[in-house]
Image 1: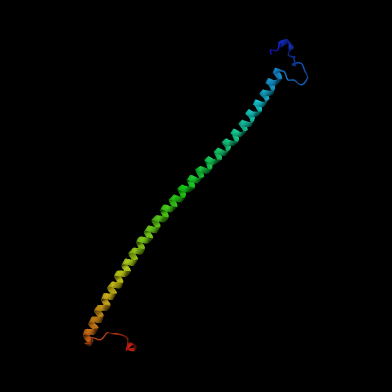
Image 2: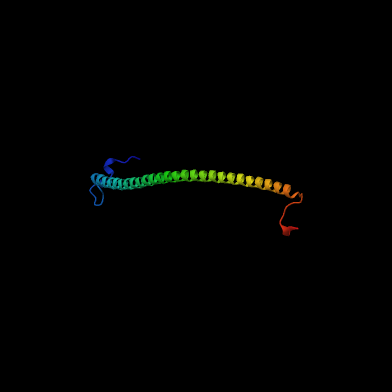
Length: 125
């Protein structure tokens, strides 16, 4: 079934029906609003990105500062450990020297007193 073009009713002059120009203007306004919204979103996204970049730079600065402090603390701990080892070694050598000296004095005392009894305090007997 074919419809004759003359039988199709022309509605272009009816009230409330947009003309092609009105339709184009409406589409143009919708596109303009969409572009404005996208521009606003883009601006906001750029601001957020800028803030993130600033935060990242601050975090890098903080990281570098903390790394420096950690390296300093490690060096101080190593120095303290080395000093502690030196003090411990010196103390051990001094104790060994005193023990040797005490042993020598004990041997001399035994030789002078001619006794093989262990020396102790008078109250120990």
